[in-house]
Amino acid sequence: MELQLKIWRQKKADSPGGFEVYRVKANEHMSFLEMLDVLNEQLIAERKEPVAFDHDCREGICGACSMVINGRPHGPNQGTTTCQLHMRFFKDGDVITVEPFQARAFPVIKDLVVDRSSFDRIIQAGGYISVNTGQPVDGNAIAIERDTASMAFDAAACIGCGACVAACPNGSAMLFVAAKVSHLGLLPQGKIEQDGRVQKMVAQMDEEGFGNCSNVAACEAECPKQISVSNIARLNRALIAASFQSS
Image (cartoon, one colour):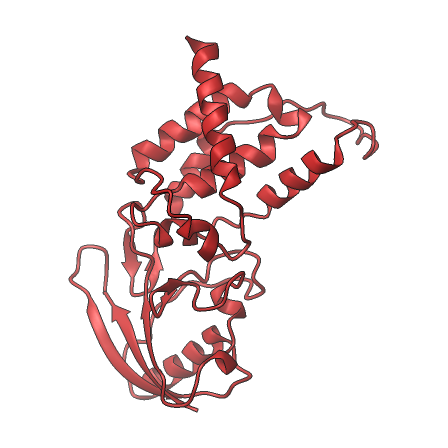
């Protein structure tokens, strides 16, 4: 198949950017990133600057492959990262627009690569959990109700890709923060520091320049791990409870 790509090109954060149009031949068995590899080989052969894009595992685990494809973070398929999006979902002659995640808290580094270190700082603000060190304990030593364990596991599936931020009209990181607060706060090991953790992480989120929750649930719709917005409600309850504890 032959495709027309409209790709955002930007040399660095403080440089003006814009779309450039390329044509590339791909087959339906390629992943989206493999198709971009073919384009870059073509550009290098023409002695042109290849398109910078982020990637690591290419197995849908790390979330590094974040980009907006035809207006949707990670592309048209639900529950799919960019690296796991295959070209069979496009047709010969399609025009595909590819952009970086657009958010004030995610400044562009180059082309399709953005700086998501703000997420790292939010995690760091959350601090630690109190656990005993030394010999590992038996997995069933602490009894945890099945539904609670399932909710914690679902929240822990967040890969921190930032699709929720890119999808939100306000550029909110609430789903990301809520997932991290939930997966620690639901389990006994994370309850001791829960009040301080939620306050510090929300404060850091605000400091990084993320917007407020828009309540449109676009974050859940575009999340490659389909994290539920019910975690945001849990985050809000935990924040209110922590505010009463500290007052």
